[in-house]
Image (cartoon, rainbow, N blue to C red; front, side, top):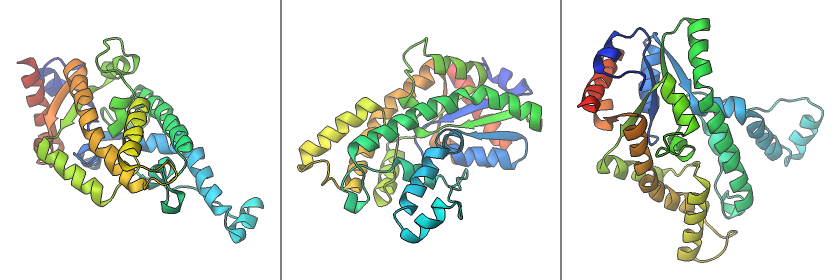
Length: 288
């Protein structure tokens, strides 16, 4: 780790962290808070994915839908209008819409083969965006004068690395430049995340083998075929299994490559000084 002790963390002029864990436990909240205090650069991996690596795919998806409308079709073909996404740190809906959900097209689903293709594109984009972390650390310092840096990673970071492999290239690169910090939820947090997701099921990125298993499992349990699957019911089914699937992977990332902090403690952090103290305590616990 780049900080071996709480004293290292407290004394450094350049605090650099990468926050990881399930979406909804505070990664973006903490990152926004640090950025708004004015002394931290906020690097959002999902924003980088949606603007740099999947930007054209997202815009083409929007244009494909617009081309189905005869009025918009003529304007698009003559370059009379512009259609593009407006992704922000707070609203990543265009990225989610591109990922979509598999199943019955009459219910907003897409063909499973196309869904898998988009999942693969996201996987490649997430790896590339994470690899850009050192570049943005240097950019933040050289261009904007920020010494402190927070990388707000996506919930699927654990799907694109092997945390048990001491030679994992991506984790090795990241750990040389940032302190890897797992925001760890408990069973109550997981239950609340599941309830929240059930009320508003959203597209997610899954590991290829995991997706194959949960898709087959859903078909066997609910019957029918790929064209009759209810998209929302499938992603609810997949999300509940993803919670259990990701937990040990996050834990291994923290154990082998970084530290962990409890989500309940993160929820009480209201400024950069409290965040500094939280990380210092976590480093002390790690050393002990």
